[in-house]
Length: 458
Image 1: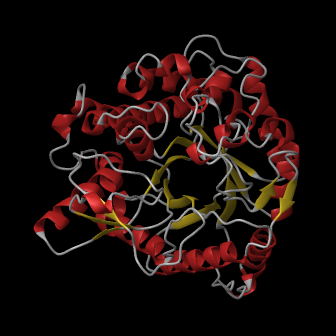
Image 2 (image 1 turned 180 degrees about the vertical axis):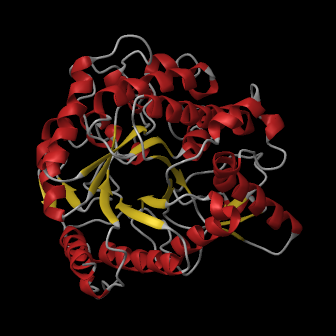
Image 3 (image 1 turned 90 degrees about the vertical axis):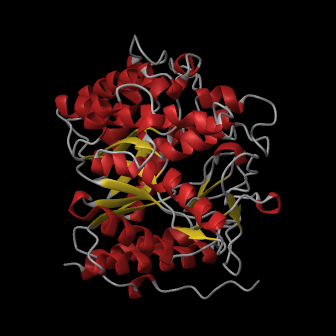
């Protein structure tokens, strides 16, 4: 297939002058040093160590060596001209047991990372939970256990007590829908449970943990707090009542089951009674005002009635019997190396839909993840992907959605969970044998785009 022509980064529409341009990463996917300096095991460490869980056999415990090489990666961010870096803090590196003694050496690592970012004029934007639950808590039920939410708030207070004086932007939890569905409902991710709809307590307890963490952060002097929620436009695959019902329940589970409690203080109709604990009281904690709302966008979903010959998802996931929907392939769309359809206007659609649904209850938005997997250092398809999505983002801004920032996923190639090293999302190539970093063509393109935006915005 002939690569697309490379679009010019200087010919994109101009965003507001104070728009925040950044890149993202997560602890489990990049840090490595899985048992270094007092770090405890996470549920993902234990899951990845099981034979066959990482499909390409990559050593997830090595990550990309970020724990040792973070000054090099911060220098890459500085060379990019990034205004912010979204990274995650490993809960078991800071509190190895999930509760109890704090590992001062582990916390000191993030202290040094924040200092390094600040020294280069890059805003630190840490995520407190990017899926790496401390193993002792996972063994006690993980997010099925209400106590995990309280322990998370304690951990948030510890981190804020150390870093709030230099961190001006906080993310509590990343993608609670994926943790619930892939980890607890379908068993594809850690902790590998296949509970289907009995996984819903994991959704509620993550939302409660977010709310409690917001309270803890603010009590410790931290501000500018949001979280990162995945959103995809859901399109109906057919014209039958069963197709429409399947698409509606999938849309509710993946888009509104989390956004509604956060932004309206209530669950979608019928879900209150499925959640554990004093739900009404919990919702008052969950729904306290956010400073901003994070959107992770990758692709739309085509959904209809359950059908044995259409059991696929954008991650190649086989869907078990018993679910009231079936996922279909979106035909005619270009696909990334991962097989995900490339539909840039879906980002505009997501943002406009959020604004229409929530109105003034929707706070300012940051795009906390958007990116694609393609092989090669001369990655012109990634450039075309970024160009298309940034244009779609600008259309959303023109439509009146208050978007304040964009974080590309990701700075470097990383361990893509169960896919291991086989999916390369980075602007920077990583040789997993030597850990050598090589900026790709997309790195240079994004650098020139940021430079052009700053020049045109003043």
